Image (cartoon, rainbow, N blue to C red; front, side, top):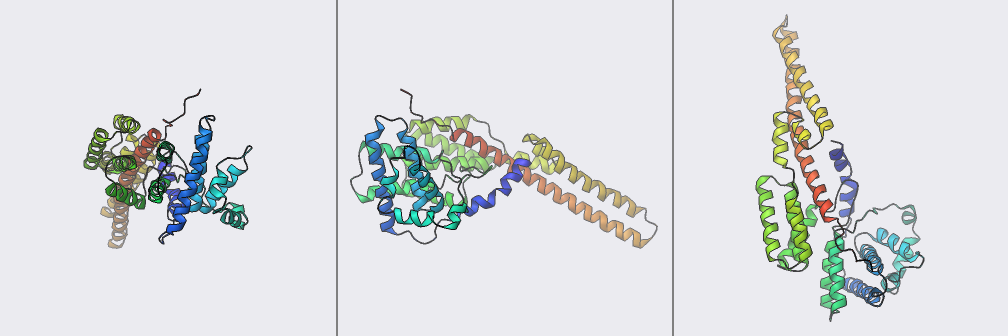
Amino acid sequence: MRRYLAYVLCAAPLWAACAAAPTKAPDPQRRLATAKALRQAMEAGRALGATDDAVVPQLEQASLAWLLFRGPAPEAGARRLLNLRELRPPSPFVPALVDGIGAADLGKLADSEDFRAGLYFNSYDTALFRPFFRQALLDELGQPMADDAAALAQLEVLELALKLTPRFGTLYPNDLAPETRRALEAYVKAHPGGGPSDRFAMLLDLDQRSSDWAAGRAEAEAGLRALRQRSGDELLKLEIDDALAAPVAAPERSFWLSLLLPGLGQASNGDLEGGLLLGGLTAAAWIWAGSRFVQARQAPDAATQGVAYGDAGLGAGLAVLGHGFTALNAAEEAHVFNVQLHWDLLSQDRLKTEQR
């Protein structure tokens, strides 16, 4: 129950952050400048990568900061860029990203009162962003992009991956917001098979598996198995194997259990405290309704009987609402459990550089 309430209470800030992205069409020249600066940072990492194991994580953090700064969260990105610039020694990638096209904007933000007060959403996690960035980095270092179209295609992937970074409390990035689902589905449809599409497709299937009832979960698992068969990404196959091997909660089972006996679905999810609370409140409403019904049958006059019957009806209505709310709460708890389970699997760092 506490986990569910935290999930609900934390939703508003995260949804507000997700909705902060600009609604107007992005400026093509600005996007191209953003992509080129990102390529320059990757080129700066080429010379350092052979001698410094910390280069890739630093470049990842700098790239995330740059994409936030130039995209949906300028303040959060600027804060990260300034932090990287203030490191000792400073990050070698910040000049490649900021100098020239971002320095003026960064200076304006740094001088604003809201920025200094920290009045902006600033909680982002790189766990789901990391595989997309590492693949983009490998592509760039292996065979640098020959034209602007390729740079913009790479930027499109990283901008979508950026949608998978907001994190707040018990809300996890793999619990896809509706607009994020639509964006990922559109990309997978436009770029079928291979590359980033496979990983986006996996995240879509896992999101469906977390929330849907039996038929939807079966469809999602069939999609994951088909994706595993056709994908050439060994890391992706390992993640799919781990996800399919992990037992997930069944929201429909929790729903029907709590609808039949309020609190039983919560208890089956491991939330005994919440089950006792909601089940107890619903039972109290039934007990009150029943006692008032008995009093109505024994009332000495019509006026007293009418009041008692009214109270009994109100108590029965509250009890029915208790059944419904408890059932929905149990199903949502199962959904949250599944999201957390998948997050624990997806957030494992399977790409750590081996120590020399």
